[in-house]
Amino acid sequence: MHAAIAGFTLALSLILAIGAQNAFILKQGLKREYVFPLCLFCALSDAILISVGVFGFGFISSKISFFIPLARWAGFLFLFFYGARSFYSAWKSDEALGEGAESRGTLTSALLTCLAFTWFNPHVYLDTVVLIGSISTRWPQHQGAFALGAMSASFIFFFTLGYGARLLAPLFRRPVSWRVLDFIIGCVMWWIAFSLLKN
Image (cartoon, rainbow, N blue to C red; front, side):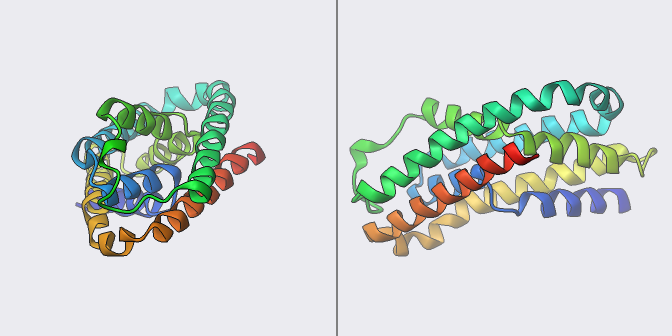
């Protein structure tokens, strides 16, 4: 139980930070577009990465230096492009919640965007594979419980974020609210993108 609580606490503290993936899920939750499959995708992705970190940390740690530079540049390019698109939307868009039903994106495009936010982000690997993996070694006899605790934190967080976003729906019936959100998302994307180049 101590290992599970430690895993849950650690994973939740890491995932609470505002990031590109969280901002995307928040926006999809506000629009009520594909919330369940996107939250499930994020949580399952975390579960896979946490499993790799907890049960394969020794092998991954010897290979991570080769993978990180490539992932860092791929993440930078994607986040820079998405941030630019958010800034453009903040400048031009007159969208409001409940309007523009025709502009609803497809599930495939939403999942591909979510995939890029998740798997092209080096911070995800550093948090799940390296940090969670290394700390799990403190419980050599209870790594499974540690991993389950960390995974449950991810599931709880994403579904709470995705479905809890609708509580903010009244605020986003005004176009200016979307513009502010798009501007904030753009800032977050570019801040993360350029921070990748500093590491």
